[in-house]
Image 1 (cartoon, rainbow, N blue to C red):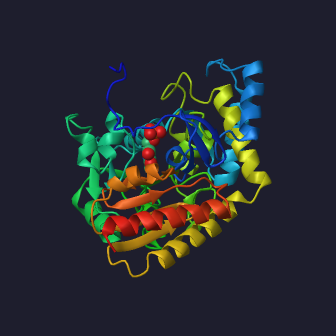
Image 2: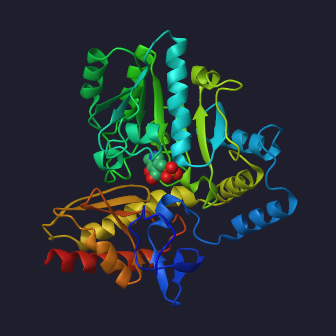
Image 3: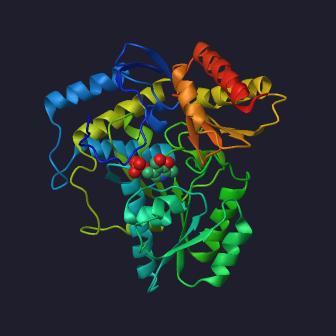
Length: 391
Ligand SMILES: Cc1ncc(COP(=O)(O)O)c(C=O)c1O
């Protein structure tokens, strides 16, 4: 069969037609345990009744008007997000890459306001910020960039989790106006920085009038065990981007700003047709309601800890397991060899997982994952890892 879809994705040979909670059913009626949540999107699980109801009600009322007019639900969502995050205001868009584009534009405009002719942003090795031209240029992965040169200029790259490298870059380059970093690198392999990494970046930014910009697209909306991951470190950035789980599957992105950064984007400087439309905002408000009414965020911390401990137990003595890392329900199991094959063998056991940065099994189960699902995940995946590594 020929496909009329551009072949930009390496797809697994399965198509899902229905979901409920952490379960997905394929076309043949087989049930699969979803430990990936559509890559950190469906944090509340599939077909959540509150999200379903909100979307249905909104579609009966009004879907879209445009940002030419006031949008009450958008204002309400901005209030809720700023209250939860400690930020001041929000620009709404439709994806993570767009949220980061807004952040990059904001940083450049901030730089021009300071009289910097060619503003530059410090970004990290192994980072991932999206697939638009500016965000792929900011991304620290040459595979994402290959074939799309010339890249957008104005990015200075340093190793992740290395404050002295940032200081060196600041000494070596003129025109740096911002630092863009993920609190935990997701695509890069679930890489956790040192405990004081973010607070040291905050200090540097304060000393040198730089914007601290956090990409919380994967870490945000409760996944880390806090609403946003920077709340683990006690600092507040100048700019923070969200997307993925904000709409639990309805596309929505947000670029939030605080203090001086909140005054940079003004009338006419940025925009989006769909950004923050009624449907997307209604879905996001329903997500926030569910998070407020439950202790799912706090539980994410406990569940992540439990999953990590269980894997440590089950994989003990397997010398091919290099490290098990986690923050909340962002879990990485690094092997000593490429292990993309494991995704297929897990699928054959009706378990959905992911491998990133070649050697790291990445698990992003929904926040509603229960004890039995945790047990199933750990048992099946540990067996597969032992079989794969031959120990
Ligand atoms: C940290 C981070 N930033 C940005 C993006 C890009 O988001 P989107 O695919 O919605 O454009 C991703 C997607 O994986 C991400 O993990």
